[in-house]
Length: 294
Image (cartoon, rainbow, N blue to C red; front, side, top):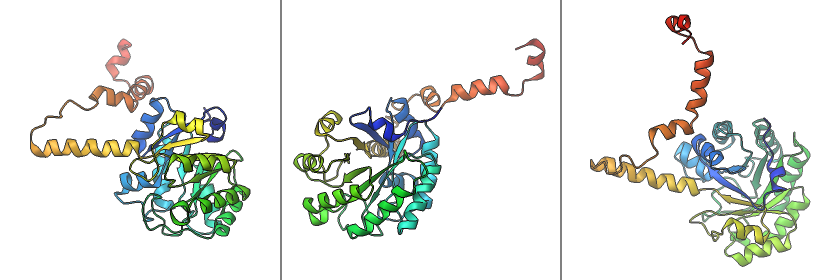
């Protein structure tokens, strides 16, 4: 079965709500919860897979391996974080092709200098807009699949202010971006202004603990946002859950035993019934059972 693309979902979902996955299990749970697509960011992948902060320590090799695990775990289309492309225009096209061949239908690339960092951390710097525009022109002209949706992210708001962020967003759309992502806006007024002044698909980044307000999907849709990312919601919840479980085990009290997902429920989540059916239908039968038909 072919996956729908992020581009096709944008035509029917307003906004398209994309929870963030940090591993294969979380991607699978997102699908089972009924979402139409999901998001993979560098922040959660660097932390969950490599135990690292999102400050440019991981690049295409590390992220590509992690993204493949997550995309293989479910049948949903995915938007991924491509950071700053890890180089110049040729590196960006190589990254684009690498992800397209993995079945990834959408990505965003940002205008930070290397090494980049999480968009809600201090100390960011951005490249000249002309450098980002060249990357976008190269990527938009060299897509393997015309359906691949390329979003331009700018981190200029936190450094140069909202006016410069909007100027860059407009230029990036003209350079070939299918949508824009203005990172680290400070309030709903700025977010509404972005949609009002730049005519394109807009991405809202609902990052808990970050600089932007957390807004419900329905409200974002009314504001005109096309994509709503809730990228680290699962990561933060599971981190606290593991801390509490480990503290309970360390104390020796074991008060939390039995409060997690039941064993049988977990095995069903990861597909035990499907694999048992294959095993029973095609697996090697015991000689005695073959004679009796059982």
